Image (cartoon, rainbow, N blue to C red; front, side):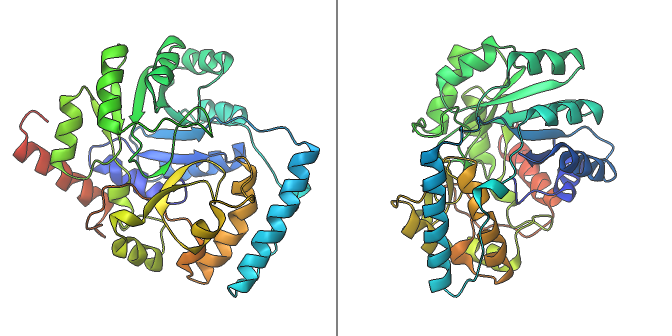
Length: 336
């Protein structure tokens, strides 16, 4: 939920009796510490810090040329749509690895760390475990789940293809195309660690289905997109509410990794072009474009990530939305 979740959303989720998740993505150690401390001022309950554990591709002559080309094409395309933006040069792009965040998580006494885009290295896993940190990895296939279990990850989040936002796949290109409930059932039969299910949960029925198939925990995101604590602006929330199921697409256009969100002009134009760089370079390249477009309230050039379960997105507080989900689940499905 990077770009959507806020410390206020994390605290509100905690107040509902749930485990809030603080999106740190690929922030620097200093930025991560600032967000953790801000969240701690709002809640005295444990929350999960969530980080990206992707590999950073080597800068080659080919990447330099492709970056220049993509920068030129995107700036020109933006200008044709009345968006004046100057995107960063490759040498000005600042990239952070997750390793510096590990020390921050430990130093700030965060007891739960979740991660996506791969697996932590063995040294980091050992270091975190020695400091009492519970680890939650993300899988999008049985093979990934088995790798997480073998490396000693405590809990596995099973993410279906229908989930909103970025795929948690270990590979950026050949991502598994399996639906969440089918995947959950297979992972449940293959590993012994507790499972959290993520993908398409928005009411008691969808939660019950994942419970039946082996999930001990349930992760929601899209139902909170329009919440009071969401970082989405009013124009983005309105665009979300107008979206239909057919508008939800997987795309690499904004970040260089597959993510599910609302189709717009930028995605439609860029998706099949030669202007998509590997993550995180594409993500860094388009970041300024998204910032400027958000300031202009232009939904055609911002990334609004959402899952396939289109519904009436509530603007109530995160706490109220989650409490209503829990109450509805307990009313309709007593075993929840």
